[in-house]
Every structure is written in C-alpha cells, then in structure tokens.
Image 1 (tube, one colour):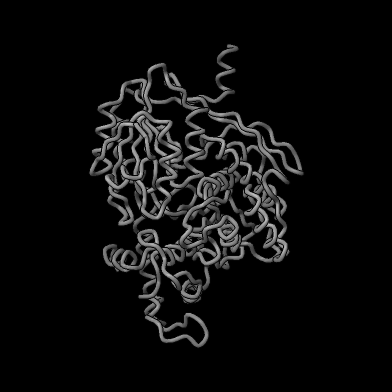
Image 2 (cartoon, rainbow, N blue to C red):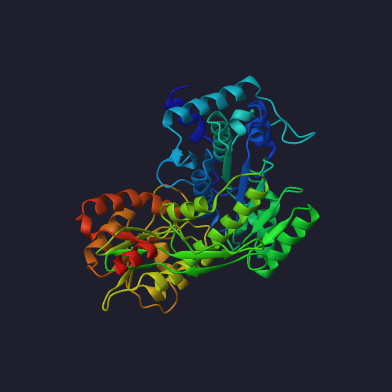
Amino acid sequence: MDHAQASQFWFGRVNFEQRSPRPGDLTLHRMLALLALLGNPHHRLRIVHVAGSKGKGSTSAMLASILRRAGYRTGLYTSPHLVEVEERIQVDDQPISREELTTLLADIHAACARQPHWQAEAGSEPVPPLGEALTFFEIATAAGFLHFVRRRVEVAVVEVGLGGRFDSTNVCTPLLSIITSISFDHTQQLGDTLALIAMEKAGIIKPGRPVVSGARVPEARLEIENISRARQAPLQQLDVDFQYEHQPACIEDGRQRLPRVTITTARRRWPWMELGLIGEHQAANAALAVAAVEHLRAAGLTIPERSVAEGLAGVRWPARLEVVARHPLVLIDCAHNHASMEALVETLRCSFPLHPGGKRLLIFASSRDKDVPAMLRILVPHFDHIYLTRFATSPRSVPGEHLAAMLPAGATIPFTVCPDPAQAWHAARASAGADDLICVTGSVFLAGELRPLLLHAAAQEVPAMRPRMVSPAAELERALS
C-alpha cells in the first residue's frame, strides 16, 4: 500500500472522535481479534496505562519525559492529535514518520485480509469482515503497539482514548495504572454521575497491579477504592497517600517564571522541582507522575532523582496553557469541560496578571456533546470580549450563532460571531492592545486549527517581544551576582 491507500483504509473507518459511539459500539472483541493476528505486540511491552477525565495527557507526557531522561527508550501513545496524526505515536519525543506509519497500516490491512472472519462474542450473528469492522482508534492503537515493539521501546506510556473499561488500549496488563482527576465529560457514553464515570475509568485496573489515583471527589474515590480492593490492586491516592505543594508561575513584562512543585509520599519528601506546564492542576498531575515513579522504582526501573527533576522541568505538551506570543499575550488551551474551565480561570488569576487597563479577550469554540452553557458561565465573568466561532475538523462543532444563544442569561459581555477560527483570531488580534491577553480555548479541535497560525504569527514578531522562560534558580543566581 502507498500512503494514499493506507490513509484511505485508516480514515475510512468509524471514528468516535468525529461521532459519538452508539450502543454496542464499545467493545474489546475487535481489538483482541486484531492484535491476535498481529502476534499480540502489547504482550511484549512494559506499559504504564493512564486514564482519567482531565490531565491524563499531561500526566502521560510528564512520565514519558522523566523516563526518557532516565535513559529508557520511551514510547508515548496519546489522543487526539493537535495538528498531525503522527503526533499520537512517539518514541523518545519523536512522532512516528509518515513512512513508518504507512508500513504499519499496510501490515494491519494485510493481517485482516489473511483472516477476515471473527466473532464479536460466542454464538453471535455473522459480522462484517474484521478489516471493515475496525474503528479508526482500534487501528491507531494497534499501530502504536506494533511501532513500540519494532522500535524496541523499553517502557510505553499509553493514554486511554475514551473511558477505560471498553477503550481499545484496555487490552494490556500494565506495570502500573494511573487514574487522573474525575469530572463530568462524555456523560452520554460513561454515565451521568461521577461514580459511574469513575467506574468506567477504573476499568483499566488489573488484578494485583498497582494503581495511582488523582480522584478527589468522594463518590469517585469510593468507586476506585472498591474496584481496587476487589481486584487486589494496591492503591495510592492523592491527598491520602501523597500530597503536593505548588508555587504558581508568573508571566508578565516579557518574562515567564516556571512554576514549582514539591511532593510528599510515604517514602520521602521530594525537593522543590520546576514544572514545565502551568497551573495548579498540572502540579497535581506531577504528583501522580512522581508517585508512579516510586512504583516503577519498586518494580526494578532505575530512575534517578535528577531525571525526575529534569523531566518535570523539560516536559512540553502543546496547547496546555501554552504561551505562544507577547504584546499581546496569547495563550492556547485545550480545556473543554466544566472542571478544566475552572482550572483555566484560576490559573489566569494566579499566573497571568494584567497591566492596569489591560483586557482579556476570548476565542471560543466547542463540540455539541459538551456542556457549553456551563463552560460559558465560568468563562464570561473573566473576559472583556468573546469571539465565538466553529472549527472545521469535526462535524460535532457548534455554530457560532448557537454558542451566542448559550451565553448566560443577562450577560452583558460584548461578543462577535466569526465563521471560522482564523477570522476569529484576526478580529481578536486587531482589537488587542500590547497589554491585553488573548486566550484560545474550548476544544482540542480549535487549538489544533489555530495553533499553526498563531505560531506563524509569533515567529514574525521581534524576538525580544516573545516570552522568555526564567527559572527561580537562575533568577536568584543573577540577582546575587
């Protein structure tokens, strides 16, 4: 297969990132059948499996960053991608090449052609050939496992796509499972209570394998505790078995001071460490990564303290409160539910002080299966003007005029409806002064569409106008010299 044929085979599948799953869609039978044809590559990998409502991508990126600096060839599988699909499958911070991906897709297609017949479950009715029944995400996950085996990955950090119990990644027996924060998201598929959502996420817990949990809401925590106990999986929980302290970042006057975090576990108190991602929610994710490191050390991996500090400081995870320009300050964030919007506005308050007279401008788009009114209720009081738009990369996008109808009743904030993200950006940029802030948020799809444009615009600026990362240690040394 050439690249065009491979892409047609892959992108022609059902994609639950583009449409919501229907009853019966979520199952592991197709995935297990495919992996068996491929020689079960997931059985040849040491895996850390990461689920959660929010923070699972950032936590995965932190842990992968730490493992790389400890000298391990590290695989990282995440979803969705921002700009290029190859971003989903990485080895040592390098996305899979187009040529490698084409080869993998051709091998998957050939495996399905050799044995097209399969059964969804014992005694089931005839089903379509496996190559037609597979979903986009199942093929992606199989390609990730195969790539990691072929590249001789020593540890793979694998992020769940949707839920956990029936997610395509949930075929592995990991060294360790991580469950990040639990909040309302994908309620149509996962349930309308935090207990039900936690139950789906905790589906990744395997008998006897340790679990690190960042769930803080009592009903979610109780569900995870019960499932861990039933499966005899040792459980460590944030705020119970380990804690963190956080010093916020401060971004102003053309400079950017890294946040810092210290974590206390049953084994030790870790020193203050710089963190490459901004926001207290990222400090909580860092605590999960460090707790995971202690489990991996107990499992025999050699991970020096220096690798942990360098990994947390050096982690880069695009579009997570990412500063892409100054004067005006421009941020991109992937927040897309109630909890992540609360984290966003709190981080704006703590880490992004405005000059007197400065304005905050918002570019917002969202998917129709999200709680858009709740997100807008959180955002509106913290901005001076909103640019409402829709992205083109998903049919789930909400038209801007529909978003306008969802603004809080009685809200007097001025807003502009723009037909596409590029026009929203140009309108916001034209009205922004040097001391203003422009924030892009609401969806991974919006961030992915706008990020290349914003990076190109930032590259045209005078270098001195761009943000400069300053660590507290470097600043203290300069002050004393």
